[in-house]
Amino acid sequence: MPIGNNFQHSEYDRKDPGDRVAYGELPTGASPDSPAWLDAMAEHGKRLGGTGVRAVIFLHGTHLSSDLFGAGRLDEAGGLKRGYSRGIPGMEALLALMRQDTNGVPTMPGEKKLPYANDGSTKQLIDGQAGDAGNFTNAYVELFKRAVSRNAPRPIMCARDLWSCEQHHLGRAEAAVRLFHRLHALCAEHSFGAGDRILVQAHGQAGLIMALLSNLLAPGKSAIREMVLKVLKGVVPDSEIALLESPVPGGGLLNGVMLDVVTFGTPVRYGWDPSGLGKLLHVVNHRPMRVDGKRWLAKMELPQITMEMPIAWGGDYVQQLAVAGSDAGTGSEGAKAANKALWELLEPLDGFERWLECARKSVRCQNDGLCLLIDYKDSTGSTSARDHLYGHAAYTRTHAMLFNTSEMVQALYS
Image 1 (tube, rainbow, N blue to C red):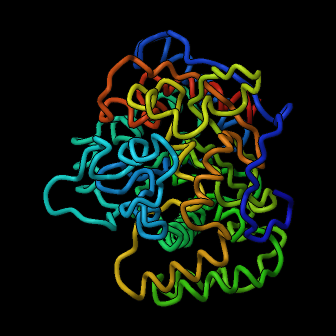
Image 2: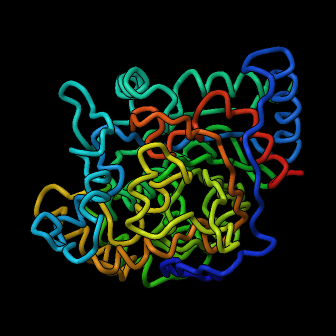
């Protein structure tokens, strides 16, 4: 999307992204925490610190009880349970793999319910149930912090941020404002300023939070931003909205700090405004297996992918299917009304037919930023969604940390 995107939705463009896209695969290398591994991470840490990166934020949600594919909205809006998908052979089998109750994705144990709190007990519970499958664990973040700051004269601050996991427009917009509030406080607390950078690594739909934030932080005045914030009043404390209510100055709202973003497996939905960010990179688990030579697109048309999804044969199916028109359901009537108001501002696409149209585009790359299509080699033949989350689990595995860091540094800070 252009500078001055002003909350426009992304286009599902099937054209070759050209020099914005690169391809690769996860190599076999030194084991995590080995001397060679630590040396390599320390070198990357020197590069990050040398280019001004002062903090790395690991932003993520969880697949536990959070409607990973957003099938709730498809059932609600399209009447899929009432046979709305009739006439499309195999579609009901595909939808069964997407619905929370039948897709095999684990649920949150005990009494924890959405929205999830960004606290230690919730993170510990998620770590115990999900491990490093689509989850930046405490152990992952601590290992990254220790490794990149090993020989650094100025240690890089690292923090893990769990968003509410309410996978709808209201939940993501609220998370964007709350994240900005925390980043603003972080810059003030550590006296970050011009020349400093914060790097956010965002997994899955957390990347959509960053897309919204890029529009909120775009310089100048925006009528759409004013309307978005108006909807959020009463949901987010006024103190967290106040800074965003006035036009954003040319130097930004983070004391001159540049905000760099790397997304992992984020579906193509909200548009990005590059003027609200520093550097931008998208990483997608992808195996270029098409027979038409268009290796930048996901492998097959819907619903034929039903046969390959259970073993994550073609890469990240969540990234391919959780597109416009899908979403988790909202709770109260007030939340439904606010979500509907945001939907009309942010995503002019709704209903089963529009979702099917968007998903069939098989688009992997966002409209803005660099894109890495990586074969994470996570298709092991297991048919357990717990093992691979339909290709969405690979990015946060501990054994992929060095590779991810190397690709980030090379793409953004070389």
